Amino acid sequence: MATIARTSVKATHRSWRLPRVRHVGHFLVYFLLILGLSVTLTPFAWMILGSFKTATEIIQTPPTFWPENPTLDNYRTIVQDPRLPLLRFYGNSAFVTITNVITTLFTSSLLGFLFAKYEFRGKRLLFGWFLLTMMIPGQMTMIPGYLILAKVGLLNTLWGLIVFSALDAFGIFMLRQFIETLPNELLDAARIDGASEWQIYWRIVLPQLGPALATLGTLSFMGNWNAYLWPMVVITRLERRTLPIILTWYSTQHTTRPNIVMAATVLIVIPILFVYFFFQRWIVKGIALTGFK
Amino acid sequence: MSAQASNPKKRRGGLAVAQHRFVLGVTVPMILYGSIGVLTIGWAMVLMFFKYSPGRAGGSILGLGGSNPFVGLEHFRNMISGVSLEARLFRTSLKNTLIFAFAVLPLNLAITLPLAALIESVRSRLKIAFRAIYFLPVVTSSVGVAMMWGYLYDPQQGLLNAIIRLLGGTPISWLSDPRAEFLGVSVAMWAVIGAYLWQDYGYNLVIFIAALQSIPREFKEAAMIDGANGWQVFTRVTIPLLRPTLLFVCVMTMLSSFQVFDIIQVMTDGGPNHQTRVLVLDIYDNAFRYQRMGWAAAVSFVLVVIVMIVTLVQMRLLRTEWEY
Image (cartoon, rainbow over all chains, first blue to last red; front, side):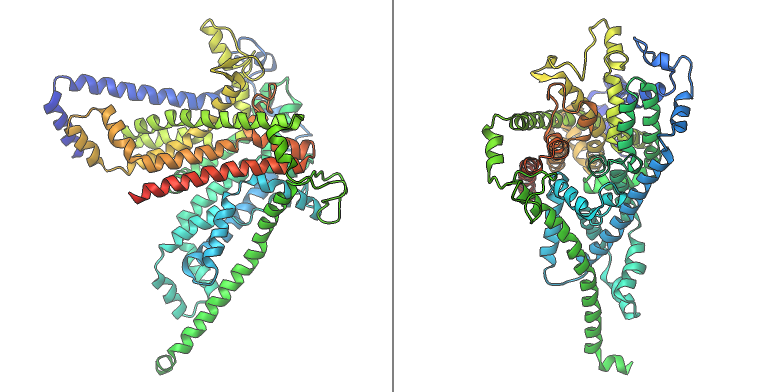
């Protein structure tokens, strides 16, 4: 309806120009959007195509765009490289990421519930303290964090990537906002039925949080899976590394064989893109709602 | 029935006790755990007044004192006027960080805002597809992004120079020529800015699209009826209505670009000739390559102060926004 109304308004104004302008305008819009798309996709394409090129083709100047003799050798080399037990690194990344996501979801929902639905002394102070820690960038706490891990012997362990990550101020903040919208009557009804506070959290509040948990979970997943600086600080032993730091290490081992490094990059980048396509709408919704990374 | 009616107070009291216990049961462990965070912040604030290296034994408390001496504000004096290598590198890093952040912000807005308006103007199914694809680089690990762009920038086999050659230009050593510059900023810096922008634009794009969707259609229609063309509607109606979002986006973009590390560390490691060395890289290098942790803590404090100032300015601006 609205479109029809708009067109007719326009038509009365300058009906003789309308068709042409609309046409050119649309053409331009799609042209720009597709130009943007190709800018977005070209680096991926370059890497993926490069990963199928042979050793001689990859060092050719000028380079080819499409592989002339597409080959899977690069992937074979990586998978068979005994120094690069890929599954182990996927395992390391998955272990750290999943542990951190689960603890973040648990603590954020529990504390979000607490801050949203309970009154107690010092609540505002405590909440303000959390917001403050959210503002302190990790680069400042990185050095003492490293020294603490060294003291307690957690350097070079995957636990070193986990112990400081149990509380996420952003997650608490976000879930508090969400839980505040749940009706108090729901909780009181459960209390009258004899539910304990923990049961209310577990049986009443948590099941209502589905979308919010999905959003927080995916954002936290991305952050942990792609983390680079902190894992690089904590872990120097090869077999404990996570995917991003193994990728940079691998590229320094094969500076003259970019086709192999490209294949490694594909193997490390692509899984997260699948996760993204699966959870796409949660991420987009979450960012649009909260505007936080 | 009668038991309940006769004893409502006690019952509520019982509930309050249960709730009280729950609050304690949650907050006490949380505060204990959270105090680790306070400890690390406090420790960093202490470290910056010492010359500290974890390799030296030092005094009894946290290894401070002794061979890790207290130097007071010396680090900060050095940052301002010192001639030592680390002092000069700090000033270079600070300058580069500012260049980076102040170049990224306008470029990012110049890409994301019009692009969001364009995406918003197409059919809804295509809109979702566009948005999803434009967002892909955001979820890609920044190390992966840095690797990909490293290959695009490769002087011999890179795509960019292949295009330049095709158009008859001279190839450029994007990441390694210390003398190449454009608009007074080194080409290597522009190159990392390019990769960073590419990774980041999808993020602001999503925020802008959401904000554009929330603007009531009637406003634009009213302007159209009054004879405004598309461009006028965009600049006079849409942008003013987007102001709160714009402010927010500006600050978030600023904050994250002050903290840039991954892409630069992988692509150039601060080179050539320290032209892309930024503050976080400076902190990392000093703390973990050269074990100058006191100095690094002082640099990180400067970074935190900058970040705090930007955040406070944001809060002030947003508050005035709410008031009217």
